[in-house]
Image (cartoon, helix red, strand yellow):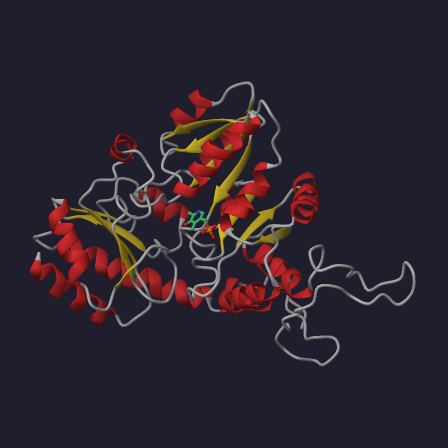
Length: 385
Ligand SMILES: *Cc1c(COP(=O)(O)O)cnc(C)c1O
């Protein structure tokens, strides 16, 4: 099973990093649930010494996602936050980072509550505004940390332009690509140096594993991430690696359905009298729709909309039957949530308003159920609002 260099995306998702098991021919990479490996003689082994350092199931996943993101190597971690934490060890005391202002809440917490203790400095700016990136870069800036689209207001950053600005100043670009997934957008193709993911979301896609991955292209980053993955040891276990590998095989198909279902719901909501505003890059009314068309293939599975008051949002959230009221996103089942009191509760109210996250906002991670059932569910819930 030799994957040609010009293999297309779906083929890469299924075959990259996947060799039949050498001892049995099993087509699926086994779950190598082992802590150590027997060595043939002193100093003679098969490249595997200890489970934290090397694991064949994890290696297969890392090769697979490196290819999917068009990177050169990938390193799998125990969670998305562990992956981001490892990437941040590329920096040292005194370094400064420019960050997308409404980045994932856990990322903000890691930067502000943990990494500031180590004398890293962070500026949060609206990176959809290229001038704001330019202005925020200082002589000590070493990294631009981007998220596009953002959660939950789905604001976009122009990746090509942002990378050009950063690289001209010797600043590396890290993109958290969790929200889009590589089926929708591949930041390395636009110049990004490192991509991080919470594999918990679309990459695994089945809401049954927590994990993270960092994908790199440059030797210095690859060597350091490999070293720190072993040195800090926040590795992804073999069972979870196997689950994510199962997930990536159907990523293109799942994303196609996520994209289609979300577009239909966005248009339905935009035309509904009780909905005051819809945020979705696939709508022509989205202020960055043209950029979305350039940078994304499909517009993703997340949608946010406003209902006018918190009370109306509460009624809707308590009235859905098929959609599950829950945090997280990217699974096959549709999840609905109230960002202000759930995912973004730890963000101060004035900061929430700054990024356009209002109390009447509802977010849906649209699953791959039959679209008519999803529409009927929203329809009956909106009737009660
Ligand atoms: C969930 C998420 C994370 C954190 O990932 P965990 O696997 O929960 O640690 C980071 N970034 C984004 C955009 C996420 O949605």
